[in-house]
Image 1 (cartoon, one colour):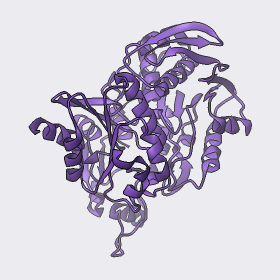
Image 2: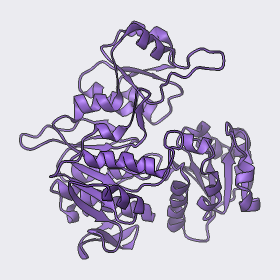
Image 3: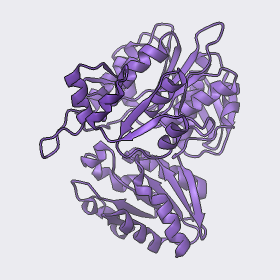
Image 4: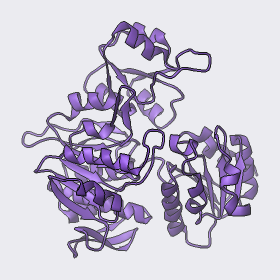
Length: 450
């Protein structure tokens, strides 16, 4: 929603917005754009009298224990009959219409792959518009409109989320985007709060495939059985696969330095500062998508050599007494495992990894995937879990890890546990899809004093 606000501001609209507990980097970016942030959802914001309320999917008709609505502003909007729409619907009508949309979908890697694709197009002179659920460091902003070329369709790269659109529109957000190039990066079960099972998510992904025109391209991960089922249900566009040895696009070499193969033939080389097989796959997906709009794989691979990743993706937040503290957005067990694996490949087998995480997503709060946590943390030397607000026993879930895992009910206790265990040369990897109570700086401050 912060990116939507930024696009509306760039388009010349006066924009304000409200939320609870907005945190960096988005809060900093919005203030820099002159967008006023209002804390909370009080009904007195009706006095602003906007032409349109754009509603995010955090808003609902839910009520607190005392019977009062959790979102009084939404109740007031409905009562007054004021105009409202969803973020994806507003984008479809006011930004994406008439553009060649390149949409990146998948359970993992959407933000990173979207950022890679936008940078490839930018580095090759295409000046695309984009909307990313993070801040790509090559751009320093999460969204922009891009240029309107004198010939051809303008390009717009968008992170295509499968989560539902709004409380009044339960379709996945990406159904609104009508892409001509659709990347299906991977697909596994997530969002247990709105999807009953994997088949339900596959159905939404097929809705996305249905919207791609015949001259469009679907870029699909050839390693994923779930995506094979999605395409088997029907596909009416050109398909390009990546990842598997027999795919249209594959890699030869280590994730930080590899050849890009197109139908088995070398067509480019990626040499960059990123690590992890997941980022190698993200790169192949972005290269295949960029080729659909005329960027040669060799040029795309060269551009990735200058890719600086996204804030909160293995971002180094600082060092203290030889101990490095990282920030990462990983929150699903598979994402945690691949993130830890990426760091392990980067630092080698002898240095220690201290994994600090909080199960903050709706799926993790429900405990749906708690049994996978020990598996996700196998490559970490020690694990520290913030269990505040959970309705399940984190200690029990992490018991298979024995003394390698500790649990804390507060950020303060967590910082004390990690600080007591850390020693020079360690790498502390903090993982959450929220602000994590500012744990990164608190750790650095505590380590500095130790």
